[in-house]
Length: 417
Ligand code: HGY
Ligand code: MN
Ligand code: MN
Image (spheres, rainbow, N blue to C red):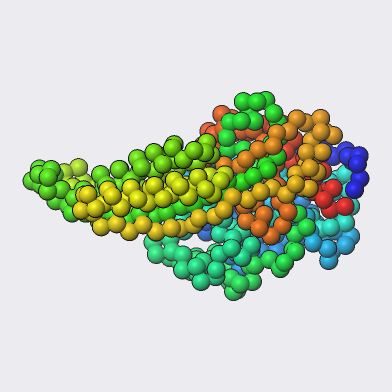
């Protein structure tokens, strides 16, 4: 493995321009970015990604669920490749950097290596993963779960969006067909995998450190809760007679907060990001409520403890209030450790580039959580303004983005040797 770094130059102007151009492909007016899986904006975004990959001189293929693979074939093409990549789908009211930095930044990393005259032995490949965000079907990382084989084809095929449309129906409308079984990667497909991403937290910016190297990705879980009480006239139904589904949901949401705060782990986070009530009239007692709970932790024991407390609270609240309860798990994934050898290479690259790096936990989940199941994996983080993400004010400077792309380029070059 070469110890010295061949000099490469990241095209900052071009990379920033591509990030800004992609940001304009959105279901919402700028500066808001929204690109929900298989929406018209997502499909236009995919077209943009294909063009950017070709401009970077990469060979494209797409699989049956819409994962896009952009490959630089190495001198020994049959060897397991070195992978990178991220996502370009975006939740409603999002920013322009989440995921995008890891796709367009990886294209630029490979283009910069090409311009430097580097010749990879192992092929280098950038993936734009389908459906990293859970917005469409309530389940995140659908493309990487299918690639890693951590979700059954039956479960994937059973997914429905809020309008009742199936994965098969929507992927076909977006031009994807073929058996979902074919998405699964052959064993040993990647030699290693390194994803570039904004931190989506405040640590790097606060510490003034330009690069984070992820040693551990927290394990996400999510649940849907359906509550059925009794409705009625807000003036006529007296308080002792009520079975108010919204108040039951409110108590459950507070139980989520309580359980996360008292788990014993600083990394336990609980969120009720979806809370719908019916009929939604000011003078009508809510008879129905629907919640989605997001519960994560870097440790399984404290996440399990928090979950059990939330589950028990839901039973207690609903029996006390006379509410019918349905509590369903959407996903419950274990945390993933980063690969020590891959981490060491990335950290070595940082020190040779004179970039301070920090070993970190990723509290957000990423496709790397599932790539870590099938390949030695780590992530490269760059700072983002105030740690903001999943909001239009999300921001990272082109200097940080370029440093991240440069570390990615050299790390992939070393891994491909
Ligand atoms: O929710 C997450 O952690 C990721 O940004 N989808
Ligand atoms: Mn996200
Ligand atoms: Mn992301």
